[in-house]
Structure formats: structure tokens, C-alpha cells
Length: 119
Image (tube, rainbow, N blue to C red; front, side):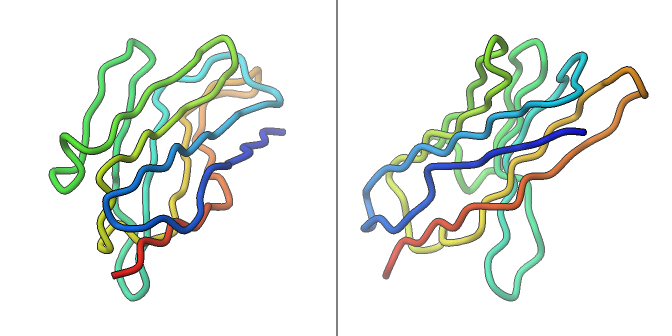
């Protein structure tokens, strides 16, 4: 059994900042990649940022230079620092982890947290 608890979403004015957190717990032996995805109304879910177990990061072009993903392996937590937010960043943000347990390796998604940047 795996749980992901996301926090940090909310409403922020354009140009502002938010920091999302996602803490994993449960039957986890190892967490490999951790990432953030988002889905805006009427659009497909898209990758925002991902960080590997070794700390290598990758970002969507639309957020490069504004967002930063990081992780605390001791806390099984991934963060997304979002700066210079724009109205087009408005979406539900989902955390995703690739993990291994005694039962094998799989992925797990969080429930999502809303980020709203009014135009």
C-alpha cells in the first residue's frame, strides 16, 4: 500500500510563486523517478518536471527557467518550486512516483492539487 500526500497548491497572482510538495509513504523499498504532471481544463495531462533517483532533472519547455524540481530522499518527498507563474500554468498538478516494493516495481499517482493563476 502506497500513499502520496500532495500540498502547496492554491491561488496566486501572475508573477507569484508557489511550492508544491508530495510525500510518499507505505510499502516502498526504493523510489526511482519522481515527477510532476499537470492537466488544464480541456487539455491532456502533460509532464511538467521529473527527477531521477540520481538527481537528474528534466523539464517541459514551457516551465524551463521558472520551475525547479527537487527531492529529499530521507523524507521520500518531491518538491516543485514554481516562480514567475503565468495564467497558463493554471491546472491540477499531479505527483507521480516510480517505486519498488517487496512485490515489484510500479508507479503511483497522487490525487492532484489545484494551482490557479488568474489572468
